[in-house]
Image (cartoon, rainbow, N blue to C red; front, side, top):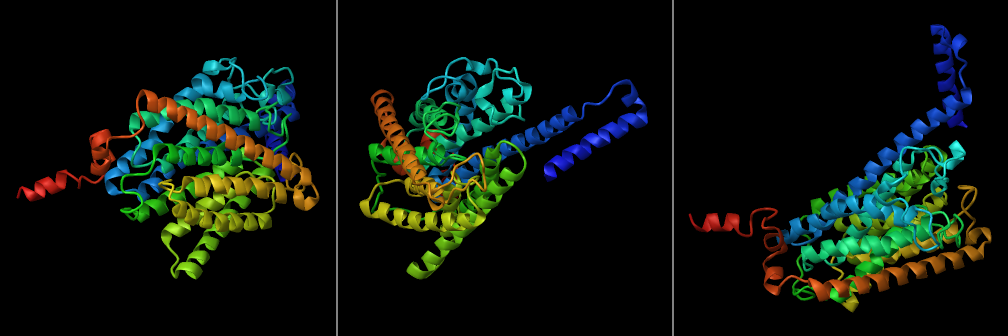
Length: 468
């Protein structure tokens, strides 16, 4: 209601301004058109800002991951996020967006939008009537390219998440090739199945799974792929006997804080318009992250004696992951439970990973895979149409079927991501190889893969000091 009042007020000012200039007598003003134009301008600005926030999450992830690794590998870890911005930033334009969102079949999009052919600044069919771009008609007030670039940022950060599991041992060439293949053959089909019109799993003509901002598409897919990649590559040479503590905890906190900040674009932007739904998603996102960070700190204090900065950062990220599929479907009170439950389960998932000694270096599967799975299940439990009439009621509202649908979507995401990642890695291993040489791994990834160092301490300073 407030939004309509603002738009009507803006339109009224335009009319009054025209009358004062004498223009209105010559050309009557279309009030409805003025309101529509104002709404389009507001929503477009909102989506472009949200897109920028989501892009920020990838360098934020770089700092978050970079703080965990040894100092001799920090640049390589940062670069594993930055290179995704370059690779997917190009491939999404050339073919990724078309495969993910163009009209096709229930499992993959068509090729008609290759190179953004036919993807311009036109609005969707809902507002213009005759426009054929009906695949994004659930975003009726933003230009098609605005929707495209917003989705591009999701496609960028998702494979970057996987890098945390394979840090400190995969060659940069192999990783870059992996990003190219994974984003094409794993991410785009999942995005199409969940978010595109007519997709197999989604709300828009599909099975009806609820995924507001990427629980299955982003977090489950990257988490499962990370687990498979960690197993296929094998552990680091120092694992598990000679592991180093995080080399830069302030980096971790900086990265987590920027991720929290960017996540508002990630979740609130997924409303695809400014207004009430975006506000709900914003509030539930912050609430879940806060509850999860608090829960993680309490668990550390009770079980280990001291709450840690790393724990606070990890807990916050777990809460952000958990709320992602639910952000626009649940109440703030439900968000507290989602954040706390997700943090609790992820906390023990991290401990369990260490017990079974799978070298997922930076806990990508325990946080993103497990957190995304828990979040998807809790979405099916807490969702309510009183928050979002376009969604569905969950288990607490008596809809048992939604839980079954969500479990089916989770299973599909696990199979597509797990099997697809295994095949891609085996192909890369048989062609260019996956791992760096043992000597390079021990010496450090930065100097061997990039010819430079993060702190100039491994070779430069020590040599200069010893020569004096």
